[in-house]
Image 1 (cartoon, rainbow, N blue to C red):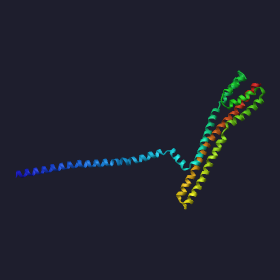
Image 2: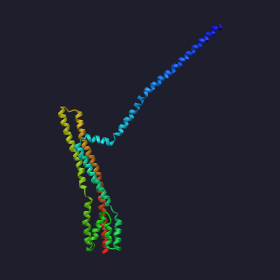
Image 3: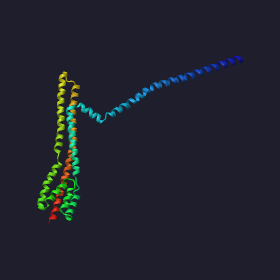
Image 4: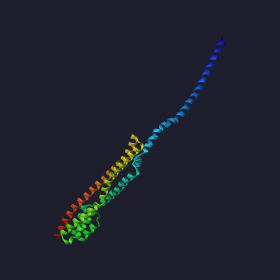
Length: 270
């Protein structure tokens, strides 16, 4: 009986050991299989995760400059180039005027005080030297007035008025060309639109049917020239109005300062 129990115990222990061994062997296999599947799926997951990032990066690279260049090509090189030339030439003239007007701005109160002090203390020659060494049209107008000092107050006034008109004309130099480019840019855009519409209808005649794709494509290309022409006109108009405001400010200051200058000269002649 003891031998029977001992035999059954040995069989049970052997069975338990074998089952544990098989379970232990199955677990690494399953782990290896899971690891292999994870490794296999990892590149796909990384690729899927990286795809939106790549697309986002591509969209970011398609910046405003890229989109503008793409639309410029779609609008046609002929009329789009002429509109671009209007923008370049108009901006060049506008920037030149802005620089000139900035350099033409003078501290009128300071100049009047210097001229008055020089006339009272050092004489006419010193006042003329101050005007000669001061930058701007106001100093040139004062110099012209001092040049007629010996001929009387009427001659000084006439000289101020005459040379003031010349100085104003110099300030307004080039504005006619900027105005021309402001008007020319949208006109060229409209012309490109009309020609694009004609080409679209020609394409419809060739195809033989009024396809929405043909019409939409031709309309898109035609309207791009108008859009660019209007954008150029708006940009140049902003610069043009700024220049006009600057000129008006300088001319107004010149007129007020000329009146004060005449009072100084008149008091000195008494």
